Image 1 (cartoon, rainbow, N blue to C red):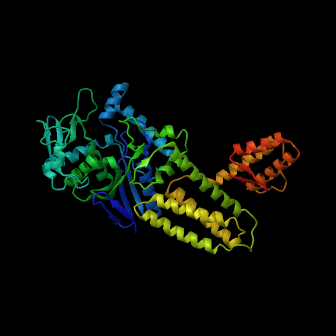
Image 2: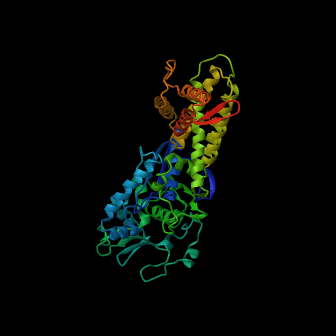
Image 3: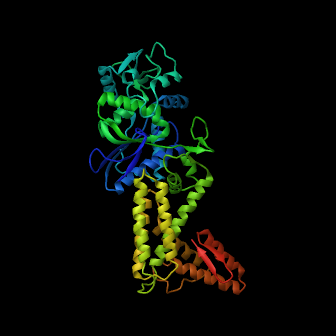
Length: 497
C-alpha cells in the first residue's frame, strides 16, 4: 500500500488511483531562460524516481513535465542578447535535456509540452472563465477574480484571502479589482512576443499554462501534481482555482512538493546568486553521484549542498560497486557442494526485499530504502569471507540482481559493474605489457580480474625480494592508477578495488 503525504490535506494518505493500475502525474518543469542549477535538478530526479517506483510496482504511468518557454525573464534575456525568445527557449531546452540525460532521467514515454504550443488551449480556458464570471478584462489584460472563488482559495498553502490581501506587495489599482487577483492574459508591449486573442495581442500568464496542458494530456481530474516547495503559492494555488472553475473535476487529487537544496542553510536560487549550475557540477562528479546525493535524504526535507556531501555520495556508490564486484568474483570461483549453505543470507535477502518496498511505500522514503540496501550489502560482504557452497552462491546471485534492479531501475543510479570488471581486466592486461610481464597461459577465462591482481601482487613481492624497487613501485603505482589499492601488512599484502 503506497502512502503519500498530500500537501492539500497535510496528511499521509493511502494512494488510490482514479483508474486502477494507472497513474497520471503532472510535474512543473523549468522556465528555460538559463542553465539549471542543482536545486532545479532535485524535483527532476525525485519525480523521475516516483515514476520509476510506480512502474516497479506494475502501474502504467503517464508522466507530463512542461517547459515554460515564454515569460518576463525570457523576454528580458532575449532583449539583452539581441535574439528571439524562441532562440533562448531552444538553447536552454537543449541544455536542460543534455544535462538531465547525465543524471539518468527516463525520457522514454515522457510527455514534455511547451507553453507556446498550447496558446489555443489557454485562450479557450480563459474564455470559459469569462463565461462563468471568474475572469474580467481590464486595459487589455485578463485577470482571475479570486473573490469569486474565495471559499476554497488558499486551501493548498493554508492561507486566507484576508491575510493575503493584508500582506500583498501589489497595491489595488484601477486595473485590478483586488490585490490577490492574478493575470490570465497580458497585453503585449511594443515589440514583444505575442499572439492574437479576443482581448487583443498578448501572451498568457504563468499559471494558466499548467492548467491548460494538464487538462489536455491528463484530463480534468488526475492523480498526482508535483513540483518544488516554492511553487505551492501562488503557482499551484492558482492552478487549482483556474482548473476547478474552468474544467470541473478534482484537478489533482494528491499534491507532492520537494524541499529546497540549501547553501549553508539558505535556499539556493538564481536571484540570490548562491547557486551551482548542474552542468558545472557534472564536470567534476558523475551524474549517478548527483542523483545518489539527492535521494539520500527524504524528499520533503531540505538538503545542504557541499562538495563534502557529494564526496560522501561518491564514496557510498563506490562501496556498493565494490561489494557487487566482489559478488561477481565470488560467483566466478569453482563450484563446491561444501561450505555455508546461505539459508540465513537468503532470509536476510527476502526481508530486505520487503523492507525496501515498505520504505518506498512510506511516502517514497528513498533515504530509508538506500539504508536497506547498505544493510544487505554488509551481510553479503560478511558471507563472502566464508567458503560458500553452490546454494549460497545462488543467493549471492539473487542479491546481485536485486541490488542492480533497485539501484538502476527504481532509484535510477546507473551502476555498471559488469562493464567495470571488463574494463579493469583490460587495464590489468595492459599493465602486464607495460611492465614486461607475460600473462600466464592458465589465465584463459574471460573474467580473470582477481587472478591478475593476485598475480601482479606476487610479482611485486618477488621484485621487492630481488631489490628491484623500481619495478615494485611501478606495479603498485600503475595498479593504483587503474583503481586497485594495495596495502602492505606485516603478514600479507591486501588489496581492494
